[in-house]
Image (tube, rainbow, N blue to C red; front, side):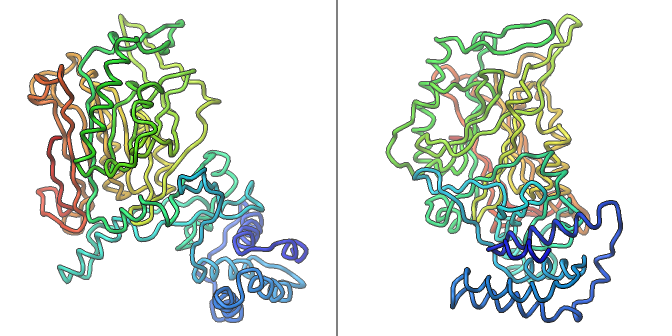
Length: 485
């Protein structure tokens, strides 16, 4: 281990190396971290604290060299799990999170997989998000109400390793989780206008667009191969009509103060999204979740800023299945093309995830968002079923995740009756009822807007004021308003 320490030149690689040693040593064995005695390792605490101070005075390189010299002496002649845990514990406790990486061409976005570069095939260090809208809302609630208890119950823990449950500021992923979830994180840097916007924000405004009520058969060229189906392309006339509608909706939103503009699944093409590219800087919307594009056996959602510049994309994991004349057909998604998982980090807001339709009931996808501590999960959908609802409610109730499902009127093709026939999508919020976990569910419907659909699509706005709480029959949560635009 001493030679490994000599070859390390930054604090996160040191954290990864010590974590890797612990995970290797404890593979299949038990260790009670609660029995760790801090008093035995005061010198390690002091050394890490000194490193933090010296970073400000001498710079991180010189400060780390001093820490490394101390650890070479401390670790020799025999390294142990407890020695390594002392290093992990105090780095986690004392070292402030600093995300660095190459910016993606002029967009103020950093793309990274882990904070460490060495040992990243065995251990990944990822920061836990602080100062999210959930935390800011909770602080405001306690300040105004004088209540010593949090607005919500703590989110359930979902550890990515045996070490991960022992850390507060950093997630520590082991090899199994790294292999299961090839993950890329996109993070706006501090100079981004998006970060500045959400730092000053006290609400989140979602614009949800049902987009069209035309039958999918009129829009998409669906092909079959045995019991699989795929989309060949979008009919040219339908694409042109949706492109004009898309352009009109985005223009309308410039006056609507919308943070997230969300379109449904499968009703996008690259040509449609191009309608607003090269546009001048716009104030609203800040981020567009462009439903999804079905192309080359991928069902992909492209997330852009308000001017059409791509931020990141996400590929659907759980194929859609339907039955016709007693034959079951499954969406043909090539697995090798959609292995990656993606998440967006916005300081002042939190972690934002995107899934597509039935991803919301896929246990592996849900587990990923539990591991990541996703604060906001946006689901473009095209489904006549409300089968997604229970998964969304569970994520809100147990993991304090706000879930928004954006559906299309095209999916409402006669499988439901009465009021149910007009129900399109919903939003779920975490809530607390006395000491019990709860959630708020608010559906949105097609209503009278169907009469105007030929001329334009009336969007639905959901506004979460996370500096204002409200007592609902289900419990206490944020104030949630609904409007149209």
